[in-house]
Length: 349
Ligand SMILES: [Zn+2]
Ligand SMILES: [Zn+2]
Image (cartoon, rainbow, N blue to C red; front, side, top):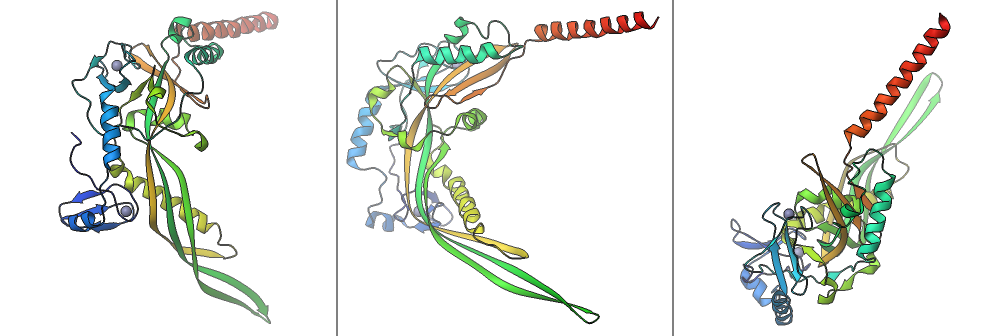
């Protein structure tokens, strides 16, 4: 699938996309465009021979699976037999071919093993009231799986400018008159900003809430990817390319830059017409796998996901509620209230 030549931006190293209207390759990250000749001249190929060789080696030892029941797509090391789906626990099947340039450049390894993950889940589940009995059972904990989730991690250098209009107001009284003097200012700020570890999920919406719940990962635990880290685990297959994220990451950098520079503006009565501009001069993108312990529980036709950051242990949990248990409690509360009323009634009589 991904055997066509791709280019990276000669200015900032982000991925380029082709704009048919302009007939040029555009970088949505640093806002520039290039003809194909420009790119060839500047040697802006996305892949070097070395990375092609590494990619081929990776594809050779990696198998791709999909789940016919829930559609989950995972990859696993050839020595790891991925028998059942980590999500819905149904059998999964081998896809006919591995597609795409999927070799990660970085990975955060799991910091604790399945036994520890099970124990942590059980401690969590046993503290929760109103969950079905089978939720906090050891057989359920057995289903917890270690899954690497795909992310794009961006570092970048940028120059940012902030412009605004400000006013300062002075009032005083003289005789019967009150004077007001309003001074108008053009406010300007600029600075160089280095952004580090802007982390963006490389899979579509469905897992967003879960991933937001377990982030962040510390930034000093990223290692260069190597195959042994994958052994015994599956990795969720990435379905968002970095080119598709340029706009979103740029927006986030713009937002950070804007609030950083805005914070340096003090002492005005009003600040209006705020504008921030950002020029990205350098960027670096790493396709990174990050560890998640995940357990999906089905209750009355609905899925409940428990997920735990495989490095920090931070938990995200959607809890299945068992209505019969709640019913019993409400029931006994009601009868206690009724009993008290009867007693009061009794005493009043
Ligand atoms: Zn660029
Ligand atoms: Zn499945």
